Length: 119
Image (cartoon, rainbow, N blue to C red; front, side, top):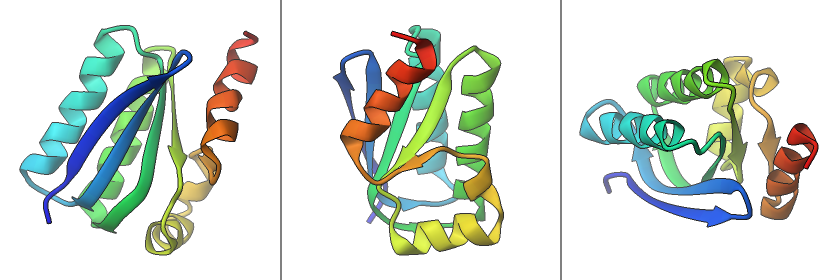
């Protein structure tokens, strides 16, 4: 199954629901472009919902880091939501759980952006 994304807005936060595999190839370029487009449109609060991600390879992990860096460089924030056990373990092994803010509850994840901006 290839990767599919769906974007929705909750308050001032853009939630990107991702399903399938985040692996090297066209899907990864699509995810990169999606995040860059959101940032270019002024969407600075991005929450990636990974609940339906079945697999992520090292290129996928690299793209998450790249998206996080791009958001930070433009004064935005990128956070992760609903990590599967496999993705959480991979981020733990690579020590990236200390880099990303991770939430298991969408409402809490969204609220974290309001706290960060002081809104």
